[in-house]
Structure formats: structure tokens, C-alpha cells
Image 1 (cartoon, one colour):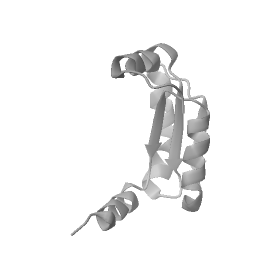
Image 2: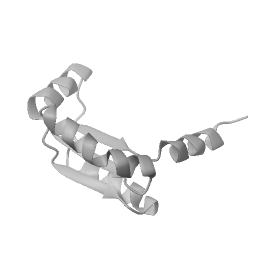
Image 3: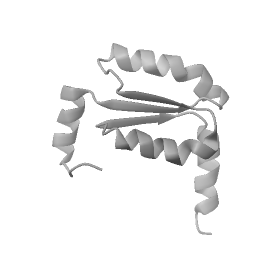
Image 4: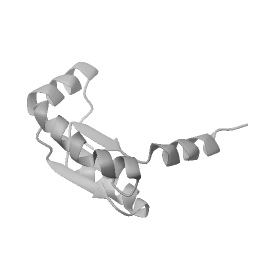
Length: 95
């Protein structure tokens, strides 16, 4: 990871540079359906993604996230398959 920044510095870097990576689980129905829209909306908002990662195999998610972070984005956009992630978080909660 890069140097630590204040929230204000981080927000300014996002606005000024627009360095964004996009990771979308395109195996999920929602991710597959909304993937093109997400990229289009980011570009319409002035962001030009430095890398876009469509994830076809969920087992590759961790490695894909590491690769996305290694690209040095100021903003990491992750989407698709939210119900699965939600179930995993709930399973980890203590009773």
C-alpha cells in the first residue's frame, strides 16, 4: 500500500487524479448485468479506470483484489454478488 493520508488528502487525490480500479464479480447475475453500467457511470463522472477486473471465478477474488490494490488506485470500486459476501459476514459474527 501507499503512504497514509488524511481523509481530506485522500478525497482530494480521488477528485484530482481519478485513479480508480474496478473489481466486479461478473459471475453473479447482478454483477454481470451492472458491470457495463458501472464502468459507464464512472467514466461519465470523470473517472478513467486505470484497471478493470471482471471476476469470473470467485476463488480468484482475493488475488484479484491484491492485484487491483497493487495498481495503486486512490479509489477501489468492488461490486457484484453482495448476498454471498453478506452471508459470509453473518457466519463470522459471534453468537
